Length: 214
Image (cartoon, one colour):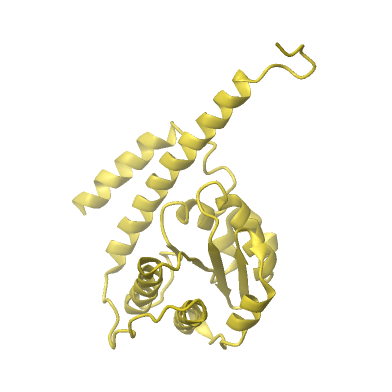
């Protein structure tokens, strides 16, 4: 609880530094800047499933397959871009462009309506067809398990064999998930805030349009 209070205070302080950073209202784009997996912390999915997926994605990255994964359980998870609910492939493209300044590798979207996949912000038909061969189960718990299997299929296709899934998962707590989510948003605010400041300074330093060049 002490960690949670400290992170909440820090998040409030940082809010004044980068108000535009989170203005797009797309939760996954905020989290995936600093984390490898987006999953809504308010979901009722057992934590062992979420922890196992987190481990699978981390293992893939450690072995050399840099992938980000967003598990979308409802239109609410899309924030201000809820119009893309039920359109996982267009959303994958949108999200990849949001993340492009920080991450340009494989991006997998897993939702009840299907999969989305892009690499370096571009669709890859063969990889999308590959993940679509993995059935998506009903309910959030099976959705997470489907995401885990899809990551393993993609990693195997790229030549990486991931460790077998643990029998009982990671067994984390919901409080830990909240702490991680807040920490991720804080980290994302810092990263995006720095990028926004850099771009503003670059624009300010540029000569006005039509001005004579030296």
